[in-house]
Image (tube, rainbow, N blue to C red):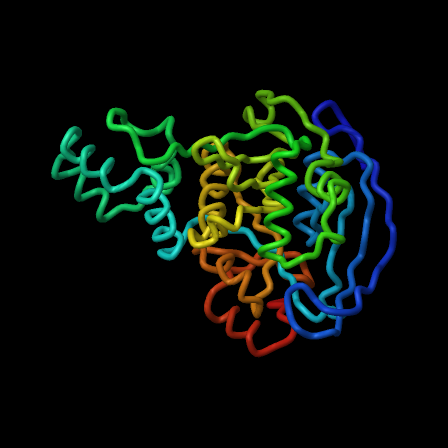
Amino acid sequence: MQSNAHNPDSQVGYIGTSKNVGNCGYCSTGTGSQAFYLRAVTLSPLHYQKLLDLGWRRYGHLLYRPNLKKSCCIQYTIRHVKPSREHRKALHRWENYVVGHGYLSECARKYPKTREEKKKLKTEFDLFRSVHGPEYPYLRTPPEPSRKFEVTIEPSTFTEEKYTLFQNYQFTVHHEGPDKVSEYSFQRFLCNSPLISTPASPSDGGKRMGSFHQMYRLNGRLIAMAVLDFLPWCVSGVYFMYHSDFSEWGFGKLSACREAALAAEEGYKYYYMGFYIHNCPKMKYKGQFHPTYFLDPENNVWNLLDEQAKKIMSEKFYCSPS
């Protein structure tokens, strides 16, 4: 792969194909899946962006592309822009929980809204306000909220705090045993990255590049974390985890809204959520954004994931609009 001042060298090697036989993590069949694999020593954000748009995904230094015709679950690459009503409800519930009804009542009395402001809140959805609404730095004080919620972005380095959260998530949500979860696997796949971090410059619009962790803290406690890749024209979600104490709040929806807002705020055109498996209940929330686009596995063209496409995915094993 060619390099220049803004596009450094990528060192990538082809490993081959691998067939995973046994219980699938997404369905109950034992058919298994097949994928093509690359290993990246170093990888420029631009080169990885191009690989993403060819159906590849990163997991640590490993890159893989599912062979959809030889897999039990069809994994489509998807990207989207706007949240649905279900996402909006999740944001509203979380904000009410964080700040508390007492805070909302006191603010309504202390900082009354005009008739125009009230009308706008009812008729127009503001993603950025909804996402940042419960964050402590964005709140009007006094009064004080019931809970202090903060979200920050930091380098994708290992800490015991992050690993403890990862353990809880794998044990309680994915039901993995202690023998399947280790510091080594956490560092290898969710901390280590081949992406070359480059400083913001006028040529890339001042955008950050590389791999980062987005930290969610409630009263100082780490309750959730996103692993994100920042690329030339997208923010790509690698992995998301949350503590089981907060499973009722729909963190899949909350994180998707926050990451979509982050992409827009920092000047990226798209938010990539990774793979979408239509018949997997765990992934239904990914298809609830409108509009959402999925990558045609045959010609690598983006197509609208509308009701017609979903109907085809429900009826057929393999869907290619081309």
